[in-house]
Image (tube, rainbow, N blue to C red; front, side, top):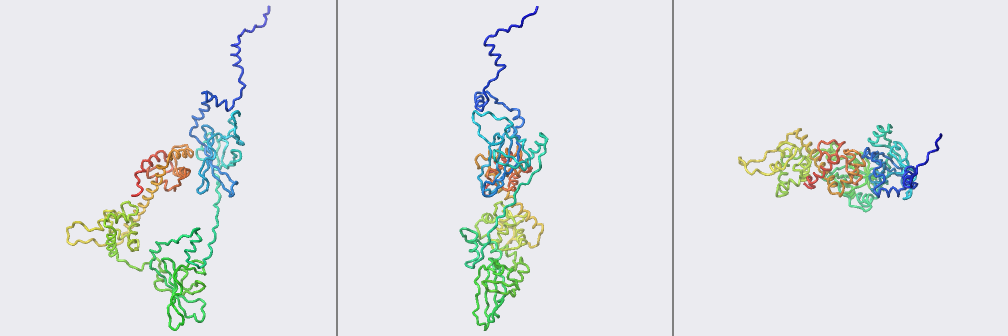
Length: 547
């Protein structure tokens, strides 16, 4: 006997609803507004992609690119840095402004966010969410690639940093190409030619009208005035193509080396029939043959010169001028070094009532010692333009410890008389004029060391002022370091780059001096920037601005 078909189990409406939930789905589409409301109510995918964040936090792919800007009147190649954050697949584009580019310093070209592919459009609350494949990903970039972002911005990627190259090699199995040079040749700006000298007024005044929109008083070279004061070169000359009545006329050219001025004098002669005397007023004049100002080489015997339409043939020089041409560095004044030292001692005593003030007057960098350069300037202050060897001999007399520099105590001992001594009419020891090559080298070394010390203090003080006095500077520069590298160490070049991005330009030598000053023995290519700025903040008040 066959049985009939099974009878359906009776269910109530509640159970029917429960079963329907298992098989049917909601028809309402997922929109940006729905996702927003779910997150606001505490639901939604609040921990979406958490595993990706934990594995790739702090890892950034960095590509260097350029964009040829043809929208401006003058063609410009603008450098950019494209940053792709592996933790959340977001992209940021920063512009690297060159120095003196004329643009406002707003480096964020595209703020950190997910960048959609294709034309950039604004999505509304009811727009469907984009898929991951519809956003730009860092794996799609490569060196030598032309990429279009944000709809109509064309970038050319020419380089990547070391981390990006190692990531592509180890994780993706793709080797990026080497750096591609995209530098443009420097634009040569033609300089307008200097108009010819008209002869009205002095040369310096006329050139001030050429080089300045508002003419300024010409500045004198005081160093040249001091070194060549009283040095006058004299030359004998005559007219190049004289008339019959001018054939016997003779002229004396006087060239002043201190200010390059020239004067022409005609000495008196018997039965000449011409009033002699001053032929050309002393001043800076133009040689019409060369088109330049007169120099000593223009007046060499045998040359032809032309001034104010008068041509002269140079005939001879005096004995002093011949010696100057034979050896320009020769000195015709011999100094008695013992007398110079006594005069120096007496002149220094008359400067100030206290020896402390005299020492401070000549210790320019206020480091407590006088080096060879400072001692030479002290001698020049009193009119003694001595040779370096002679300066070393006098300095060695002051330097009793023979360490290449004169301390304050040694200066006082040489300048003042002893308060108490056992000998009647005791005098100061005489100057030793024997040449000491070892002391010459030692004094030169001390001068270099002291100058480098001053440069280190200046660099550390300048950088410390920026770090200590600028509000919120540490937060901003740490953020810059986060954009530059994912590691906790940076190189001096990266420190210079970060500070330049914040508007403070320093030479790489000054950065290195400051790093070695606060972190002695540090590796300049691998410096912990947290320890660096902690040390800079701690040592700022140890460096006084004025010593």
